[in-house]
Length: 121
Image (cartoon, rainbow, N blue to C red):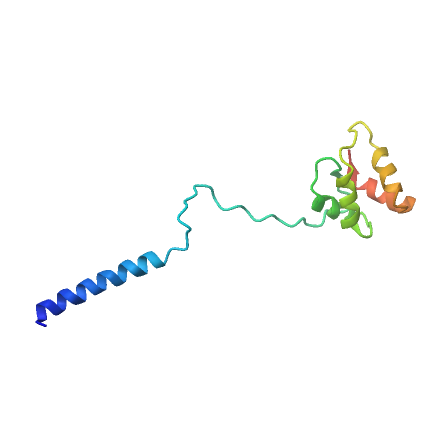
């Protein structure tokens, strides 16, 4: 093979190599999306003591953080119960519907009072 042919051969192989590497570097499935990647869901930070959250609108994590700050034991479980029995009448500051539903579990008056103290309707 002559020097000129060898250089042409190397140039073609180099071009093929770059084409293969360029195609293989993509991890896309071929679909393009203009939407940005979803933001990470922040973990609810502990609510400051005395902070009330909405029993109707707060996330379960936010409710759990407020209950924990109010000194409620097993706050995650009680937050689940609060969310399960939604919605609550917005004109009932005492959250009577919630109190009645929590009473099914016999948590004790002190626990129910702590739960309600951390919530607004």
